Image 1 (cartoon, rainbow, N blue to C red):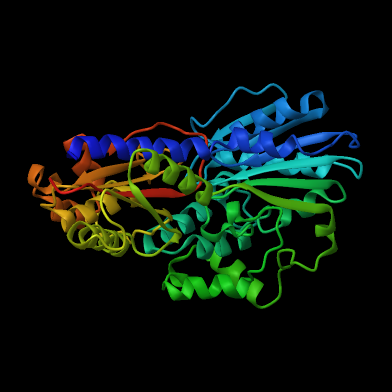
Image 2 (image 1 turned 90 degrees about the vertical axis):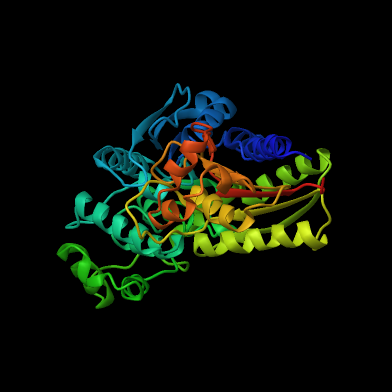
Length: 430
């Protein structure tokens, strides 16, 4: 099996994962089973990379009972809407457009009454796309905190514990605004384990984290003293009990709230596995919950590929190994890239020279870090084509490395987000 054939098959397998992660179909399937005719008005609000596609499905399913609404989306992640508006804004760093949209979302939630339904649509990216800083914290200060957290390698749960306690809308606070209306939240998950309090920082979900948890994250990464003064003061006042906590699971307001995950990484991996089997690969889904430092995870995947190629364990070639989840990158250089591109570059170092191995890694949202690529593809010949891989990796410059080879995975906005899909293909020996 040739390298070009394996590369084409990896792309087909990834496209199957994207089709399964289509949020429009997921919303349509869910709403077809529900009856909302008893509600006086239905407002549609939300945020995320998939929010516009989800809102489009909601409009089609519910028709004229949708009174109106607004969803915040990443630039370019739009869809045709009639009753609900979309508002493009910044991601991964929140911007003023996001704040303006979040203020409108909050106003819509507050306007809902006891006989109304607030249909909230949340997908990956919502944490950055629904910014409403809690005074006196400013947007610029939240942006600085986000930059610090992304650069230090903090995991998404840790980042969201901070976000919730610097926000006036996250961590269940949007549900508090909507009370006494009914709230139905549909979630497309990009979070390992589908923890609903983590997806989009859980704007309608009870928040198990506390100000003390947020302070411990800051100390774990040694960045408390690097925070803007207003941010540090808010966290410390919260720890001291001088600021109200986010609503907790025992708050009676959640009796009128339902949160449901309608799409996740497992569904994408299952579809990828079906496609791989149809292409003739013996297929193993290793895990949908892969996390940790990107380079270490890449070396582990490369070791599995080498073992399969050498011994046929744990699955005989032709083999496909699939994993999902999200890794983290600790920035050491000033280059350009994302976790999927860095994964492929780190793996390329360890599979160099293998004739029958391809590594493919991409984000289902179509973007990887601050780049226009979803990820990258590498094989045993990658280092021969550009031997300078180590220097690019040390500079966190995986984008320019793969750009020079034409091996970036470019999909454009996919209007979904169920984390990352990684594909190892090991062909039979020639």
